[in-house]
Image (cartoon, rainbow, N blue to C red; front, side, top):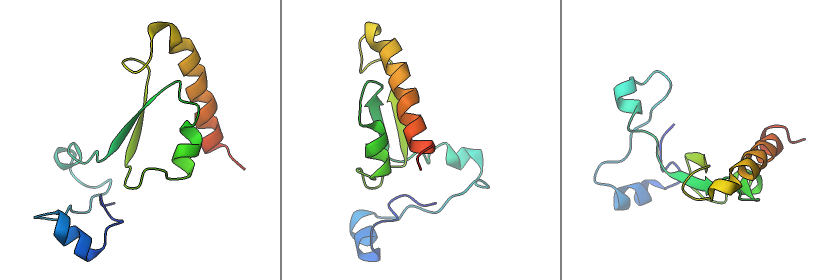
Length: 95
């Protein structure tokens, strides 16, 4: 895997002084700890979690965090938990 793999060679050269390097599950943990990449924080109450991920709405997105704290009210947590379970099932168990 390599971040920004959607950029052309010219795009990489224009964007970076030194282009990101590839990494995989064999890469040492000390290096992987810096390899999180572009992360999207989504409120757990968001009703379009699954479609947004499936459609690859955010190019270059490497990881997603479903937030149950700062982006929602305390009273919304049970609803958000149910929503996340429903949305993840749609993504992983789609036909």
